[in-house]
Image (cartoon, rainbow, N blue to C red; front, side):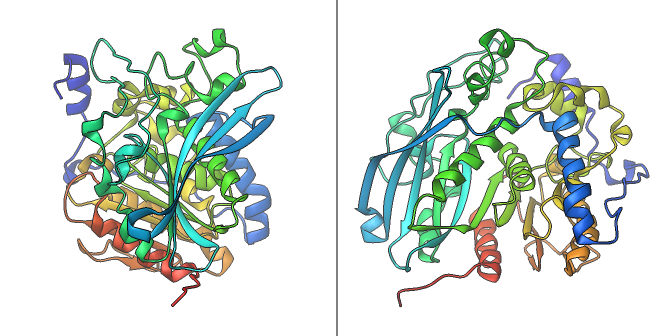
Length: 415
């Protein structure tokens, strides 16, 4: 993509030279001496602070939720799975409504209920599977002057083109269900149309949604959507709501971390290449920074985060505390060896530092002092690896995610 001059300058100011990383210090995560104090006093405080300064306010559940089964297929993938498409209807007493469609595959080879991987996708449900009969997205095309934010629905020719990030057959063969929703169903990833075409329209008048001073953002809306997906899972006897791994890649990796931190019903949190505003330490001057991220996608975050551009060290929390908010639940972070913007070392360091809070719960955390070599996975209460290659979520990543789930979840096989 060709940037305009201003954008290009900000992109080039990102440091990707390890020798230029200045000394930094992190706010202390371990401020108490017991798990009870952390969970009941410190955790609520930081959940509020992340809302006030980074991700914005999290809306409540809607007044009314209805789950409509709009598609059912017992023999998906040559009888490997049962497929459901669920339309989640959200409605307020005022009459305002919104909906989102969830694609759910449940393995036929395990006894119900099955543990499940759940996440949002960036390209539409039809793009995430090789099956050719998934309904195409209902999202209308929207253009922007810069071309950076163009939104278009999936075309027939684009079916399955992101299936590499969603190896559904392999997940099912390992005994896990898998569920996904198109992120744009909850918040259209667009700077001017996003708010009015989002779940925030359930809670705020359109005049406020068109205001640039909103105190909420896209990541909060997407995380809200993940929790509503979990609401449905709690109602479906074929899947195990107590064994849900929430995951995402890139912007949706940021989202998965925030959703997992905010909603303790998620039993496991997995984040791939989430970078700045995700797993990466903000204070470590390498890769993505606030200047770049809040120019590129300001509407993802709370407006107050703009105050910390080029002064990340003045923010009173960092991302190791975000990961700590998930304690004592398992968290796995994945990076790419060529994904310099996401800062693999900054992501690893953040995860390692979260281990101090996990120790309150009797956990050794990641139980490693240094990053593992490329292609080597750490599988403890906290997990980490670096895949060989760029910014992506690959089959190697999924192999390790599944291994991590095997370590912490239980599957009741029919065999």
